[in-house]
Image 1 (tube, helix red, strand yellow):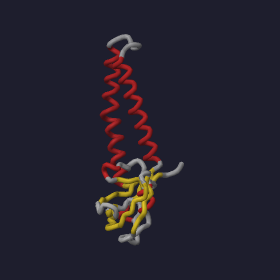
Image 2 (cartoon, rainbow, N blue to C red):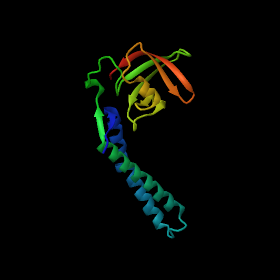
Image 3 (cartoon, helix red, strand yellow):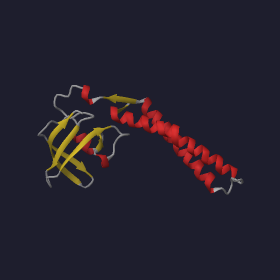
Image 4 (cartoon, rainbow, N blue to C red):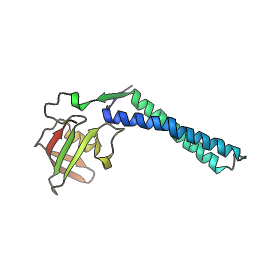
Length: 158
């Protein structure tokens, strides 16, 4: 089984989600199924079928999270020798050379990535381009809309 890197925060969030699924969402859907069963004929009972479908989604997510946790390689960026280079878990501030926009990203694992929260997957085009670079380096990122040029302004290990 291949391990997948994950940050300490990412693992904590997955465990919290798993806890919520097991203690809150799973019991609610079981109660909804029981209530729908009480209404009689299950063939034409939309509430029952919707609750069963929701139960399937919850159970699938529980299995998925358990698998991620079992194969996780937890990386604490605060405890790694970094030599000033961008590594997994680094928070990087870059300047877009085209429009001078400044953005910060944290480089994370697959299950944590969320561009809306500025969490980028380390194997994404941006993540791959940043890994092992240093402050003041210029980086070219190949995106579907063409090449983008960035300057690395700051690297944090938090």
